[in-house]
Length: 395
Image 1 (tube, rainbow, N blue to C red):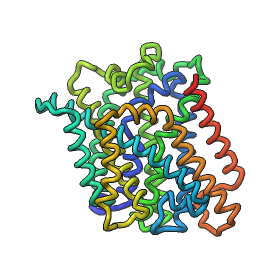
Image 2: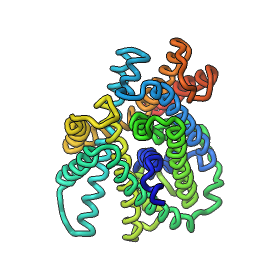
Image 3: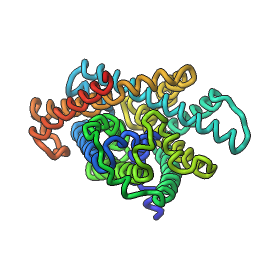
Image 4: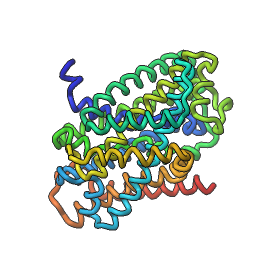
């Protein structure tokens, strides 16, 4: 048991799971509402497979380079400087936006908890600053510190998650699960949301270094970490969609209001559990995204003299955005998040794989197990999901 706790494979698996299970999980049932539980299984599972294969593509290219290179260095080496510039912009936009949203969301929950439990009234800006300082010092001490902090928060997140699952299980009705949808085509529009929910590829350089570039361990971590997130999503959708008829829910209300209404919004205990789950889900995502971002801008995954500077570069900008106007990034993330994620973690990895395998004909270790046909289908699926997102935005 002691060796399991200290095992970096366990920590790496939970880093991926913690990265994926953000507060957005609360809203997944709303996305699945129009199509129903069983029909929503298709985009959810396909999205997991899509992003799992994306991780294998990146790992195949990255493992040949190993030290002193990050995702952008990989892009430049395989696709050229223009691809690196595009990738740098997409990565920075996506992860500064995510960090800003996470800082804002977690600070709101902390502020509300201080008021309701300890009767301490602090402004959200003060809470934001302390939140930023906490994350700064955790990230400053590197992967191992983040690993153990993440394990602690993932454990608390799973406790609150399982509490909600147990409470909700008593209210599940089979007629809600087996309800037939009259708008089956709307299931297509859930693809971009589900794709974003499986974004972990930014962690591959960090985890690879942490596991000493052991391909077998890294592949296992990617599969188990993302697979655990898939199981958590599936069970959550099953419970929530089984609790209430579609006719009584609206897509206009916030995810937290929706979930709270399903349980008992008058119960302080239920509110505490929901807020706890939201908070720990945000914190685990914040830790994983922050760690990968520090390693991203440092161009290495090992200890370096300038970690203080790199950590500040990761924490300060999104903290400023959250202090000034968090809605700017939240709106941008809502509009472009799906497209940016697919371009960054879908199209660019498949282009790197194609260039390395079939143009440069390098003798790489074959980690992505498929050939040209599957790669071609993957590209078509990528453009199809982007088209769905564009149609959804303009309609």
